[in-house]
Image (cartoon, rainbow, N blue to C red; front, side, top):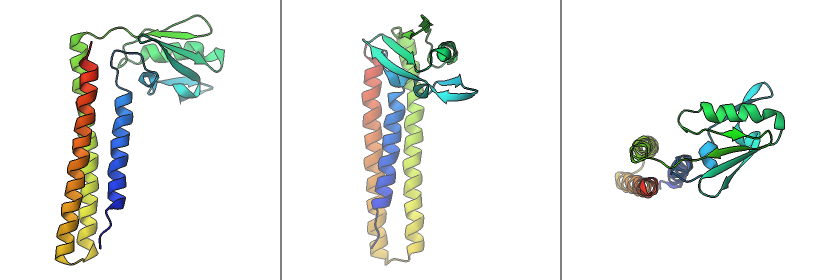
Length: 180
C-alpha cells in the first residue's frame, strides 16, 4: 500500500510557507510582519530586524520599532528607508523608530496584488513538484496497477485540494489589499 501522508504534510508545509509570505504583503494597515524581510547592519553583519529590535503596530497607520541596543537606531532607520519595496519613510527620536504607513493608492494596490499573484504561482509550483515526487516514488515502488492508479488519483486530489486552498488564501488577501 502507498502512504501519501509524507506528501500531504509536504503540501501542507507549502501552504503554510505561502501564508507566511502573505503576512509580509502590505495591505494598507500597519502590521509588524511588513518589516520581516528588512536586514539591518549591526555588529559587523546583516541581521533580520526582529533580532535587533522589537516591532509593534500602533493603531492601523504606525509601526514602532524599539531597538534592543540604542546604538543601532541609525542603521535600523536606514535599512527601512532603503528597502524600496516597502516605500516607507521612518523617523527616529534617538530611542524609538516610528514608521508611518501611508494609505495605498488604487494603482499601488493593483501593483501589490499583481506581485502577490507571483507568490501564488510559486506555491502552486511547489505543490506540483511534490506531486511529481510522489509519482516518481509510485513508479519505482512496483505496486500492483490498481493500487498505483488509486494512489495517483489520491495524490492528484491532494494537489487539487491544496491548490484550491492557495487560491482561497490569495482571494482573501487580494480583497484585503483592495479594501480601502
